[in-house]
Image (tube, rainbow, N blue to C red; front, side, top):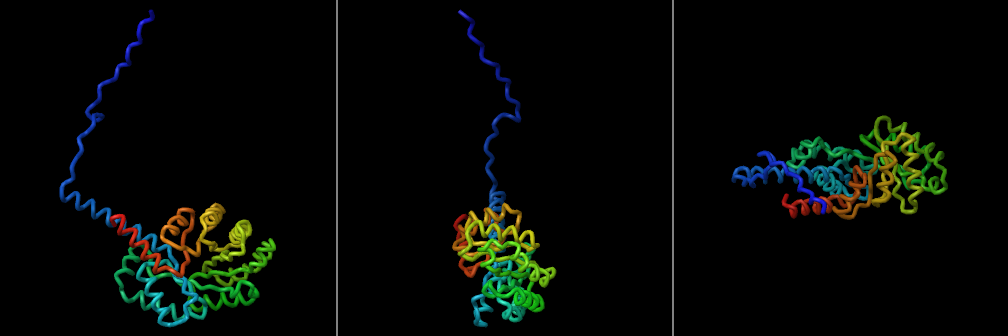
Length: 272
Protein backbone atom coordinates (compact mmCIF):
# COMPACT_ATOMS: atom_id res chain seq x y z
CA UNK A 1 0.00 0.00 0.00
CA UNK A 2 1.34 3.47 -0.80
CA UNK A 3 2.43 5.46 2.23
CA UNK A 4 -0.06 8.01 3.54
CA UNK A 5 0.94 11.54 2.69
CA UNK A 6 2.10 13.42 5.72
CA UNK A 7 0.31 16.61 6.71
CA UNK A 8 2.13 19.77 5.71
CA UNK A 9 3.88 21.35 8.59
CA UNK A 10 2.38 24.66 9.68
CA UNK A 11 5.02 27.11 10.83
CA UNK A 12 4.38 28.52 14.27
CA UNK A 13 2.74 31.95 14.38
CA UNK A 14 4.86 34.88 15.36
CA UNK A 15 3.75 37.23 18.07
CA UNK A 16 2.54 39.72 15.45
CA UNK A 17 0.45 37.07 13.64
CA UNK A 18 -1.26 35.74 16.73
CA UNK A 19 -4.80 37.09 17.28
CA UNK A 20 -4.82 40.04 19.58
CA UNK A 21 -7.43 40.44 22.28
CA UNK A 22 -10.11 43.05 21.60
CA UNK A 23 -9.25 46.41 23.08
CA UNK A 24 -11.98 48.29 24.88
CA UNK A 25 -12.01 52.02 24.32
CA UNK A 26 -11.76 54.21 27.34
CA UNK A 27 -14.59 56.64 28.06
CA UNK A 28 -12.53 59.51 26.64
CA UNK A 29 -11.62 57.59 23.48
CA UNK A 30 -15.25 56.57 22.94
CA UNK A 31 -16.35 60.19 23.29
CA UNK A 32 -13.72 61.35 20.80
CA UNK A 33 -14.78 58.63 18.34
CA UNK A 34 -18.44 59.65 18.62
CA UNK A 35 -17.44 63.26 17.99
CA UNK A 36 -15.45 62.16 14.93
CA UNK A 37 -18.50 60.31 13.54
CA UNK A 38 -20.74 63.30 14.23
CA UNK A 39 -18.42 65.69 12.42
CA UNK A 40 -18.08 63.32 9.48
CA UNK A 41 -21.86 63.09 9.13
CA UNK A 42 -22.15 66.88 9.31
CA UNK A 43 -19.53 67.25 6.58
CA UNK A 44 -21.25 64.67 4.36
CA UNK A 45 -24.56 66.50 4.84
CA UNK A 46 -23.01 69.89 4.03
CA UNK A 47 -21.37 68.51 0.89
CA UNK A 48 -24.68 67.06 -0.32
CA UNK A 49 -26.54 70.31 0.41
CA UNK A 50 -23.83 72.14 -1.55
CA UNK A 51 -24.89 70.19 -4.64
CA UNK A 52 -28.27 71.96 -4.69
CA UNK A 53 -29.11 74.95 -6.88
CA UNK A 54 -32.38 76.50 -5.76
CA UNK A 55 -34.65 77.19 -8.75
CA UNK A 56 -36.51 80.46 -8.07
CA UNK A 57 -37.53 81.15 -11.68
CA UNK A 58 -41.25 80.67 -10.92
CA UNK A 59 -41.14 82.95 -7.85
CA UNK A 60 -42.29 86.50 -8.51
CA UNK A 61 -43.27 87.82 -5.07
CA UNK A 62 -40.50 89.86 -3.41
CA UNK A 63 -41.07 88.30 0.01
CA UNK A 64 -40.99 84.80 -1.46
CA UNK A 65 -37.75 85.62 -3.31
CA UNK A 66 -36.17 86.84 -0.09
CA UNK A 67 -37.26 83.66 1.70
CA UNK A 68 -35.86 81.52 -1.12
CA UNK A 69 -32.50 83.31 -1.08
CA UNK A 70 -32.22 83.14 2.70
CA UNK A 71 -33.04 79.43 2.61
CA UNK A 72 -30.32 78.82 -0.01
CA UNK A 73 -27.76 80.69 2.10
CA UNK A 74 -28.84 78.92 5.28
CA UNK A 75 -28.47 75.45 3.81
CA UNK A 76 -25.20 76.24 2.01
CA UNK A 77 -26.62 75.65 -1.49
CA UNK A 78 -24.28 75.98 -4.45
CA UNK A 79 -26.45 78.56 -6.18
CA UNK A 80 -29.81 80.09 -7.02
CA UNK A 81 -31.41 80.23 -10.47
CA UNK A 82 -33.54 83.24 -11.49
CA UNK A 83 -34.78 84.98 -14.61
CA UNK A 84 -32.79 88.03 -15.83
CA UNK A 85 -35.38 90.55 -14.59
CA UNK A 86 -34.90 89.30 -11.00
CA UNK A 87 -31.10 89.52 -11.05
CA UNK A 88 -30.71 92.99 -9.44
CA UNK A 89 -32.98 92.14 -6.50
CA UNK A 90 -31.59 88.66 -5.91
CA UNK A 91 -28.01 89.88 -6.20
CA UNK A 92 -28.75 92.47 -3.51
CA UNK A 93 -30.41 89.84 -1.30
CA UNK A 94 -27.41 87.53 -1.67
CA UNK A 95 -25.04 90.33 -0.71
CA UNK A 96 -27.13 91.15 2.35
CA UNK A 97 -27.28 87.48 3.35
CA UNK A 98 -23.54 87.08 2.92
CA UNK A 99 -22.90 90.01 5.30
CA UNK A 100 -25.38 88.81 7.92
CA UNK A 101 -22.95 86.24 9.34
CA UNK A 102 -25.56 83.49 9.73
CA UNK A 103 -24.15 80.38 11.45
CA UNK A 104 -25.19 78.08 8.60
CA UNK A 105 -23.54 80.37 6.07
CA UNK A 106 -20.35 80.14 8.08
CA UNK A 107 -20.53 76.33 8.00
CA UNK A 108 -20.89 76.55 4.24
CA UNK A 109 -17.87 78.84 4.01
CA UNK A 110 -15.77 76.32 5.88
CA UNK A 111 -16.26 74.02 2.89
CA UNK A 112 -15.27 76.76 0.47
CA UNK A 113 -18.90 77.32 -0.47
CA UNK A 114 -19.35 80.99 0.40
CA UNK A 115 -22.45 82.83 -0.81
CA UNK A 116 -24.54 80.85 -3.35
CA UNK A 117 -23.66 81.54 -7.00
CA UNK A 118 -26.11 83.53 -9.08
CA UNK A 119 -27.41 81.67 -12.16
CA UNK A 120 -29.61 83.29 -14.83
CA UNK A 121 -32.05 81.39 -17.05
CA UNK A 122 -32.05 82.74 -20.61
CA UNK A 123 -33.67 81.68 -23.86
CA UNK A 124 -37.36 82.36 -23.26
CA UNK A 125 -39.28 79.31 -24.48
CA UNK A 126 -36.20 77.89 -26.18
CA UNK A 127 -37.46 78.89 -29.62
CA UNK A 128 -36.52 82.53 -29.07
CA UNK A 129 -34.42 84.05 -31.86
CA UNK A 130 -30.63 83.64 -31.42
CA UNK A 131 -30.17 87.43 -31.44
CA UNK A 132 -32.57 87.74 -28.51
CA UNK A 133 -30.73 85.00 -26.58
CA UNK A 134 -27.44 86.80 -27.19
CA UNK A 135 -28.96 90.05 -25.90
CA UNK A 136 -30.31 88.27 -22.80
CA UNK A 137 -26.87 86.78 -22.15
CA UNK A 138 -25.19 90.19 -22.31
CA UNK A 139 -27.86 91.71 -20.08
CA UNK A 140 -27.55 88.89 -17.53
CA UNK A 141 -23.78 89.29 -17.35
CA UNK A 142 -24.15 93.05 -16.95
CA UNK A 143 -26.62 92.54 -14.08
CA UNK A 144 -24.29 90.26 -12.18
CA UNK A 145 -25.04 86.69 -13.25
CA UNK A 146 -22.13 84.37 -12.48
CA UNK A 147 -23.34 81.60 -14.82
CA UNK A 148 -26.06 81.14 -17.43
CA UNK A 149 -28.51 78.34 -18.15
CA UNK A 150 -29.50 78.40 -21.82
CA UNK A 151 -32.79 77.00 -23.09
CA UNK A 152 -31.94 75.81 -26.63
CA UNK A 153 -34.20 75.29 -29.62
CA UNK A 154 -35.73 71.85 -29.12
CA UNK A 155 -36.92 71.87 -32.74
CA UNK A 156 -33.30 71.83 -33.94
CA UNK A 157 -32.47 68.89 -31.69
CA UNK A 158 -35.57 67.00 -32.81
CA UNK A 159 -34.55 67.50 -36.41
CA UNK A 160 -31.01 66.31 -35.80
CA UNK A 161 -29.63 69.70 -36.88
CA UNK A 162 -26.77 69.59 -34.39
CA UNK A 163 -24.56 71.95 -36.38
CA UNK A 164 -27.37 74.50 -36.52
CA UNK A 165 -27.85 74.11 -32.76
CA UNK A 166 -24.16 74.84 -32.15
CA UNK A 167 -24.42 77.93 -34.38
CA UNK A 168 -27.33 79.08 -32.21
CA UNK A 169 -25.36 78.60 -28.97
CA UNK A 170 -22.00 80.12 -29.94
CA UNK A 171 -23.15 83.80 -29.88
CA UNK A 172 -24.47 83.21 -26.36
CA UNK A 173 -21.19 81.61 -25.32
CA UNK A 174 -19.24 84.57 -26.68
CA UNK A 175 -21.59 87.06 -25.00
CA UNK A 176 -21.18 85.25 -21.68
CA UNK A 177 -17.43 85.80 -21.73
CA UNK A 178 -15.83 84.02 -18.80
CA UNK A 179 -19.20 83.09 -17.31
CA UNK A 180 -20.06 79.44 -17.72
CA UNK A 181 -23.02 78.53 -19.93
CA UNK A 182 -24.98 75.34 -19.21
CA UNK A 183 -27.21 74.08 -22.02
CA UNK A 184 -30.54 72.83 -20.65
CA UNK A 185 -31.59 69.56 -22.32
CA UNK A 186 -34.50 68.91 -19.96
CA UNK A 187 -37.44 69.13 -22.36
CA UNK A 188 -39.54 65.96 -21.86
CA UNK A 189 -40.02 65.60 -25.63
CA UNK A 190 -36.29 64.89 -26.13
CA UNK A 191 -35.55 61.18 -26.25
CA UNK A 192 -32.33 59.65 -24.97
CA UNK A 193 -30.42 59.83 -28.25
CA UNK A 194 -31.49 63.43 -28.93
CA UNK A 195 -30.40 64.38 -25.42
CA UNK A 196 -26.99 62.75 -25.92
CA UNK A 197 -26.59 64.49 -29.29
CA UNK A 198 -27.21 67.75 -27.47
CA UNK A 199 -24.65 66.80 -24.80
CA UNK A 200 -22.00 66.13 -27.45
CA UNK A 201 -22.84 69.35 -29.29
CA UNK A 202 -22.64 71.41 -26.09
CA UNK A 203 -19.28 69.83 -25.29
CA UNK A 204 -17.86 70.64 -28.73
CA UNK A 205 -19.30 74.15 -28.70
CA UNK A 206 -17.42 74.94 -25.49
CA UNK A 207 -20.30 75.04 -22.99
CA UNK A 208 -19.44 74.73 -19.30
CA UNK A 209 -21.80 71.76 -19.05
CA UNK A 210 -25.36 70.57 -19.54
CA UNK A 211 -28.52 70.20 -17.50
CA UNK A 212 -30.44 66.97 -18.12
CA UNK A 213 -33.56 65.37 -16.71
CA UNK A 214 -33.33 63.61 -13.37
CA UNK A 215 -33.07 60.10 -14.79
CA UNK A 216 -30.16 57.90 -13.77
CA UNK A 217 -29.69 56.42 -17.26
CA UNK A 218 -29.52 59.84 -18.95
CA UNK A 219 -27.24 61.32 -16.29
CA UNK A 220 -24.90 58.33 -16.50
CA UNK A 221 -24.78 58.43 -20.31
CA UNK A 222 -24.11 62.19 -20.32
CA UNK A 223 -21.36 61.76 -17.72
CA UNK A 224 -19.65 59.16 -19.92
CA UNK A 225 -19.39 61.84 -22.63
CA UNK A 226 -16.85 63.62 -20.38
CA UNK A 227 -19.18 66.58 -20.01
CA UNK A 228 -19.96 68.27 -16.66
CA UNK A 229 -23.54 67.23 -15.85
CA UNK A 230 -26.23 68.90 -13.77
CA UNK A 231 -29.69 67.46 -13.29
CA UNK A 232 -33.20 68.77 -12.83
CA UNK A 233 -36.41 67.38 -11.40
CA UNK A 234 -35.06 65.63 -8.30
CA UNK A 235 -37.93 64.27 -6.23
CA UNK A 236 -36.29 62.99 -3.05
CA UNK A 237 -33.04 62.84 -1.10
CA UNK A 238 -32.61 59.19 -2.12
CA UNK A 239 -33.02 60.11 -5.78
CA UNK A 240 -30.51 62.93 -5.38
CA UNK A 241 -27.97 60.48 -3.96
CA UNK A 242 -28.49 58.05 -6.86
CA UNK A 243 -28.14 60.81 -9.47
CA UNK A 244 -24.95 62.10 -7.86
CA UNK A 245 -23.51 58.59 -7.90
CA UNK A 246 -24.45 58.38 -11.60
CA UNK A 247 -22.36 61.48 -12.31
CA UNK A 248 -24.46 64.56 -11.58
CA UNK A 249 -22.40 67.34 -10.06
CA UNK A 250 -25.29 69.63 -9.09
CA UNK A 251 -29.08 69.52 -9.03
CA UNK A 252 -31.44 72.35 -9.99
CA UNK A 253 -34.58 72.05 -7.90
CA UNK A 254 -37.57 74.15 -6.88
CA UNK A 255 -37.86 71.93 -3.77
CA UNK A 256 -34.48 72.69 -2.23
CA UNK A 257 -35.87 73.27 1.27
CA UNK A 258 -37.79 69.96 1.23
CA UNK A 259 -34.72 68.07 0.01
CA UNK A 260 -32.59 69.72 2.68
CA UNK A 261 -35.08 68.62 5.33
CA UNK A 262 -35.01 65.04 4.03
CA UNK A 263 -31.21 64.99 4.00
CA UNK A 264 -31.05 66.30 7.58
CA UNK A 265 -33.56 63.70 8.72
CA UNK A 266 -31.59 60.87 7.06
CA UNK A 267 -28.42 62.13 8.73
CA UNK A 268 -30.17 62.23 12.10
CA UNK A 269 -31.56 58.69 11.68
CA UNK A 270 -28.13 57.38 10.75
CA UNK A 271 -26.72 58.67 14.00
CA UNK A 272 -25.34 62.01 12.77
